[in-house]
Length: 69
Image (tube, rainbow, N blue to C red; front, side, top):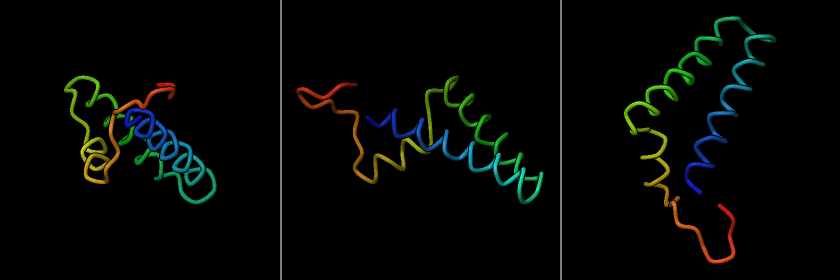
């Protein structure tokens, strides 16, 4: 469950920052690049700050019986 939440947050950040770059200021693409770099870093090091934040908020990796993924 936590991985789905992390991916959802990252995807939302990318889409919102792209929209902001188109409609507000092109410099919002730096935020898009930051999200991409953070995803790459977490794939190499297996450490993600958003993972730690979600843990503190009580989001777990547990899958309940009958629940998919």
